Image (tube, rainbow, N blue to C red; front, side, top):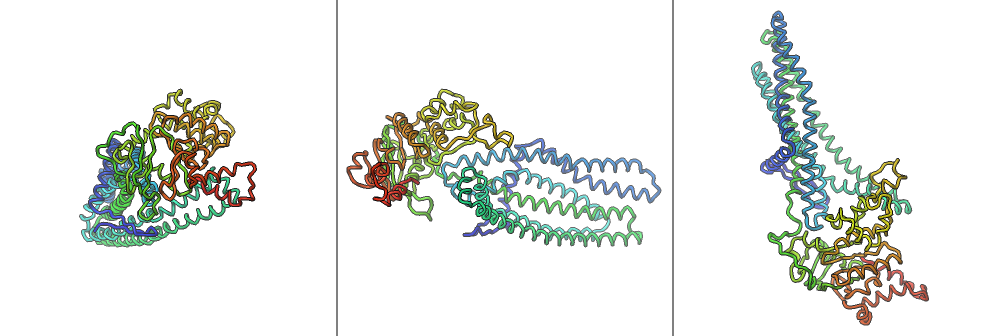
Length: 636
């Protein structure tokens, strides 16, 4: 039967099966990866394993011969003594050499395996995998599994070492007592069964506590996050979050403790069984020596052989159990590395044309999963080329989802999105994204230099100061970055420095939220040669003066270009060529600012509600619900 592990994740059982063929494939993959990463060290480690297996057998025979020679008068001991001393030195040195070689293999394999793992993660086209908790748990185990190929190979050498030792001592013991040999070998059966069961249980608990450990990491991340520190301290919720974190840790600890208790009971029982067998063999050997059936050297050989057989059995069993446990982990690694694309990848991608006509959503329906509600409901939308399209709507209307679909982070559930008539699903996603510049409302703040933070928008210009500076000027951040202690080479973080460096701005600085917003804009402006610019709340972190300056720059920059501007500040998009109002996953209004105002629809109502908040002669008491209305038009 194939080993099977069934785990409850809180909703549905998850079955992990590692059958014979799957085990063989995983073991072969691990061995191939290890050999490719460290061929010489792997070969040397194999030779050390063979030597470490043979030396104990040779030592036992040499010791028997020495004792027999001593009891016979002591002739010819010098050569035996030298050989015995050499065997002792060899036994002392081999473990040290093995440890060094194993560490070398571990380092080399981990480097290659990690590169392949994150190369596979990078190949995922969209965001579906990163929003799937089951995949995130598998990825966490795959990260641990990236270190297992070398351990699988080590377990394989452990099998070889145990087998050689076992054969040598079994052969030696069988010459003295076939009955004792059979008795010792029979103890291997329950040991092997028990260790395999424990290996499956240990691997299973790692999967079982995956969600628990992710929640613990979430709470820990809040407690040591600069971003969350203000609210946590203001509201005094640190103790609450710490309690949640420790509760998750206790849950994980209980699961591990149950496994450790089972290991203690099972392995304790097996150790007792081994001790009983050894005692029985020793009693037999002493009785046989008293009746002159065995020599004193034979007694020493029996003692060494029984211990050697048990040691060989334990080595074999431990190697099998270790290999099985590591293969269960490595299977998660293989599953991620060999995973199918999260979005369909065309076998022969269509060349994406220059955007000359426009982008169209044709009866697009979308939801984030079968169990989720529809976000877009038969959306029909046209984004004309060469024009600025503004997009507004209440929270949850679907604006951010439209942006994600434009970047092909997801595909429509039904319907199609075309770029000058070409379905986005038929083109290479990487080529599409090279033609798009974007600033998202949840933009990234990279703990890198200012130069790198901007250049991440187009790494080909990392060493092109002119283009970097041009993009930064358009975003209104060039003067700031130039004035930093090391200019554009200043680190925009304090993450990598110790206490002694905290007062030295040369080692890195922190930017304000608005300054980071401009850096993100500069990153997007590096894509100014692209076909489409997406600006999702580009001025959310700016003050009124900076916002006015930014939108003036944006109007100049996007003139004659295709752009999509999403903002809850309706005044920021009134100059767009077309404004689209999204509600309940569909377009309810579209047109220019004046046309939409005259239509007295949703746009006019939202615009006037927001505009009333800026009128000096308005009486707040006359519209007690106005603030709530204004809050309700912030975007998702």
